[in-house]
Image 1 (spheres, rainbow, N blue to C red):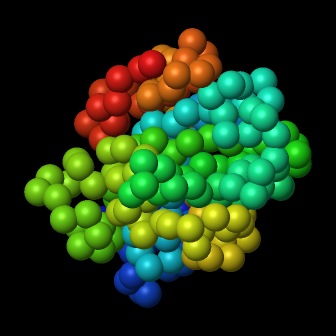
Image 2: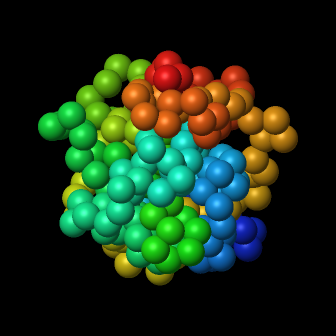
Length: 216
């Protein structure tokens, strides 16, 4: 079984209770920063679910609220985007194209309406559960896109508003000591018609799990 090293030196191997506790959640202060800073800092961090699933974040996009016409919060609060106007360190989960869920980490100050979209991750542990959820032939296709990542982790509307610092719904981000890349890949974001010129997408260069989405 795959293992990962926690911030306190504990080695965690998914559901194996003898392997020690899973790595602790990132502090709220990590998310209380500009979304562009958090987007880069999340590269290399680990998304963990309490059922043993985990994956290393390899691609992100920043969305900057009223400063960003590509953001869901550009025109202000609505029932759909309310979570983005709440405290940092929560998940904003939305439904798109009538079939997919996408997850974002809320950032900045409360009422900013800013967040980081989780675009792709490299699976670490709990791959059998991810394979059951995704039904794909190759493991590289488990989490190599924002909707794929959510499907692999079983993230849906029930996770909108989840506190990833308190891990109140069994999902959080952790630091296992892997540093973000010194020179991350950078481009405009994927699939936008508004705000398409902002270079607010970052990824781990050379990682095969980065999505195939073309910049806008």
